Amino acid sequence: MHKLENSSPVIAIVGLGYVGLPLAVEFAKKYQTIGFDINQARIKELRSGTDSTLEVEQQALQAVKQLSYTADPDELRQANVYIVTVPTPIDQYKQPDLTLLIKASKLLGKVISEDDVVIYESTVYPGATEEVCAPILEKESGLKYKVNIMGKGQKPKAKSNVTVHYRGMLLNGVVFDSSYDSDEPIKFNLKRVIKGWTEGLQLMPEGSVFVFLIPPELAYGDKGTAGIPPNSTLLFEVELYDIK
Ligand SMILES: NC(=O)c1ccc[n+]([C@@H]2O[C@H](COP(=O)([O-])OP(=O)(O)OC[C@H]3O[C@@H](n4cnc5c(N)ncnc54)[C@H](O)[C@@H]3O)[C@@H](O)[C@H]2O)c1
Picture 1 (cartoon, rainbow, N blue to C red):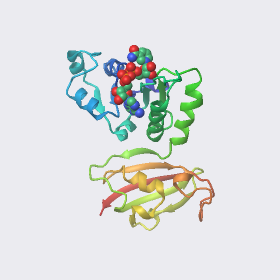
Picture 2: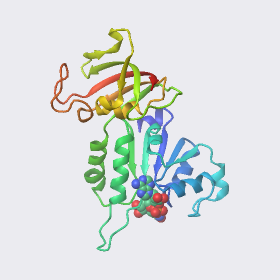
Picture 3: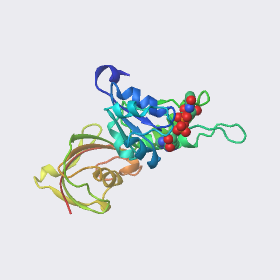
């Protein structure tokens, strides 16, 4: 909650139904808010200023300025507080069906960063957040990144050739590789590098400088390689100059 008090948080509401949309509208009166839903048709109608659930009146919906709608998970990365309001129906045996909650948690695990806050507003049985949702968030949160400079160019594809300057470090600060040593940017094909690079570089518009925190599963795993011990998380600063 530190962030809510000390800076301008960006709130994401995940699931824009009876509960999520009114919540998003309320938060957007004070904070920049992103409304996310997997249902494209729902996003389309909300962008056009209509709520078919009739929870929020058209006038109120159209008056709200700091609320954007999206079905693109990548846009959720800008947020730092996430509120999950997806349905949790009960099945034919009156058991709670957590399928959609699990799906939303998997998606959030991939986009959240350290210090972000995830709040579950969906109705669940006691213990479900700790026992079901939190482990998914932890497991899924793979690649983390910070934007130092956001470029304006195209983003590379999984098989693009990219020209970059980069510095790779272990978490103890030891630099294991750096293109700055040779003073010459280096060209790579993104299908021939560690997974964290293939995934991460595709998020960078040309001209960007990002810092990546890459877990071992997306780097050299439990074997390691020269200069990189087994199970190492790697820190890379990458400047993307050119895409071919
Ligand atoms: N409706 C109520 O009065 C009420 C009151 C208290 C609590 N709740 C609880 O709040 C939760 C949401 O209820 P609701 O009535 O708003 O549901 P709803 O069915 O109106 O809306 C849910 C929205 O979530 C979207 N969604 C589904 N899976 C998603 C995913 N993986 N990622 C993103 N969006 C997804 C759906 O497309 C839909 O737009 C439920 O757990 C419910 O039990 C509801």
